[in-house]
Image 1: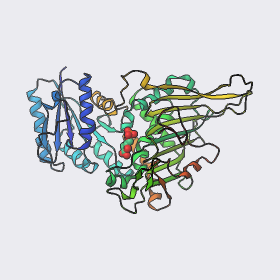
Image 2: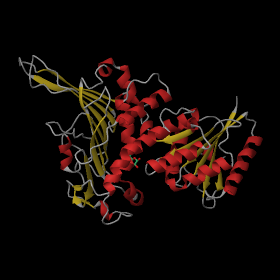
Image 3: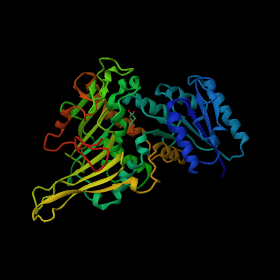
Image 4: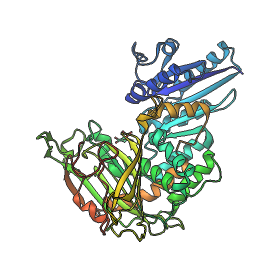
Length: 481
Ligand code: BG6
């Protein structure tokens, strides 16, 4: 069957379209993975500019069209609909598939969704009609529920693709595969054998020019509510019934449902970067002096917490989660810390660690003990390591390419389902409320450090965070960054 695939981008002149969506379309085209007969329609508020599609491969851009759309004006959507009908009648395709990608600021989502539905662009008459939205999915539980409700007035859940770009990362997709296809890991995946889990998403950059957005969100809403809870749910979920989007997404939601209310007095640390000098003498401005940020802002640029999952698998096992801007290096990793093995050989063995390095130097690292040569009773702890970069140059780290292809294929596995989004807000909202009430302290920290030192106290025993370096195998507070 021959189909015409129309990719409508609302907000086509914006940063997201040019930096992520166009390059992903180009890459799919180059790899011959873009469905044949794909046609791009760009919608924007302004008059047509000659260079709107300059970042799109010429094979696609030469047929692309721009339509001026005021998102609150239904008449403009009717014009868009007419255009779709005329494309349908001109083409000999039996099917006409539509993807409406909302690449606009979230304030426009409601208008666009309402008008897409009113002009019946959502109707699956001649083929599929899918809608794509980017985070943030609401600002809290209430607004997320409203957004979901609105979407569901015109779309079924399997037509809705909520993008969390972390799920498109190759190494994030690998979490489940590595866990479930290796008995040496999977057999130990519970409270009997695992002592604690750390999830770190550190960034060396500050907030750049995103002050206006960021100051209203902070690290909690910007990173924890979405990316880090997604990672947590993949690491902690119980066995899905089958390898299907819904079985996996069901189990992810179950993890969130089992998270115990976070003890905000003892188990949360918030920080904000202050004016400081880097290790090489470079000057860093403070968060408060950034464009768009209020000069007495209490928004956190660092957030760490300890939380517990109340189920059979994880009862009493702490999960330590942290994210921050202006950290010493950009690194995202998950560390599974195993319990100590009681051994007759030595009492100074270190516990095993399994590290999923999501970025950079993507790979896996296992720390294990072995006998120190020449010594009867001494052990040494060494690394077993795998780096994706050694595998082949087919390793594709671009999440937008993966996600776009899945949207074309209708595979919802790597997208956030409505109940997940709402559960995530249910976890985050009570914390935001305490922040609003000024009940959770905010500590300053210097750029290039791992955030407020007090975050080490979340452990309350001899353990502490792993301080990762840029390269997977090294760690320590001071290393090549
Ligand atoms: C975005 C956040 O969702 O993720 C940003 O809004 C953050 O603040 C970014 O910088 C991090 O993504 P990545 O892929 O660079 O780890």
